[in-house]
Length: 154
Image (cartoon, rainbow, N blue to C red; front, side):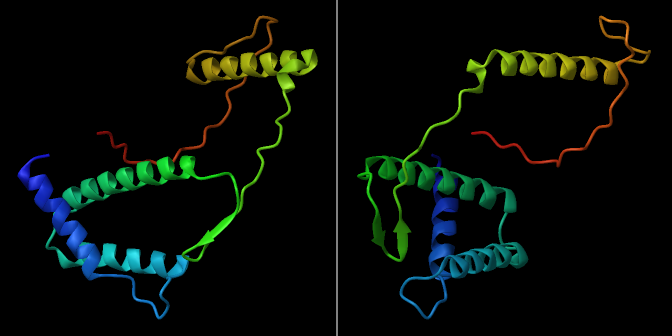
């Protein structure tokens, strides 16, 4: 980590500490945490004092670190209920999942659906009429736009 990145991380952490969660309770509620975090983010945006791309990058790095810490500790906890710092953790048995693929009829239907989906994709991209192996025209279906998103890797 270079010096500039360390400085940005320290600034973000310091800003987060300065804007500690305002609550009348020792233990803030989930709603208070959400509101406080949103208020901090909006104050960062509105201030104009920060490069938002840099702050976003540092927030993602902090989020990744916290996620790893949380998952590692969670996996080390005994499989039992507990209550701590206002959180209630209830252990639930995973139960069983039905193995539909064990059924021949289900497997055949699933294969037919997968095949039909591939035909519909080809028909949609085709500039001419498209027919299946039985000579039946495959009509074009509509599409639904997906929400655009920002993909981030590091």
